[in-house]
Length: 173
Image (tube, rainbow, N blue to C red; front, side, top):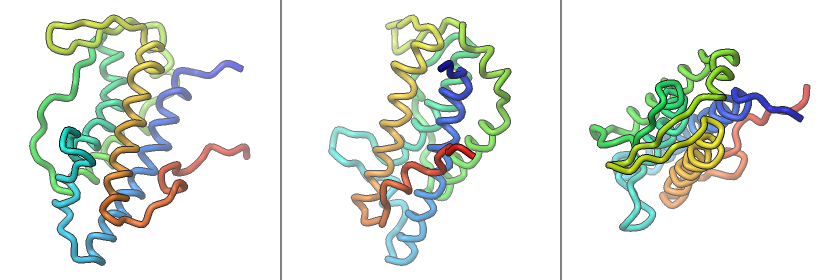
């Protein structure tokens, strides 16, 4: 069975970003219901040496839309410093990314498959093919940061389950 580059990337991004939209909405509702300042969640870390919730959301965006932009340009770098965001701004960032990815056509994304890409971190450069980058670096990071954001919300008492994380599955019609 052949799978297109679009199905391997954008289809997965759309499913998880759609789920993150719902997860973030449940988080906002929980904060409202329990009188919790949502900024507490934005700044939460699971461990002292882990980056906060806000970084997890930035990274989900960076390893989806940003990954495709990196493949297109031939260079991908870590996301770098971001201005502080409120919980509502993080929700908007996910919504904007979801909308931008919905505008990607399979033909445009599939055309990226054979490209080369260099991941640059400081002076270190790691060469990849687009496929190698997607499967061995970007998708694992995308899921790691989405899972960590979910876990931070759970650790703050947000009533979430596995189905919330999975989102709308692509079932046979």
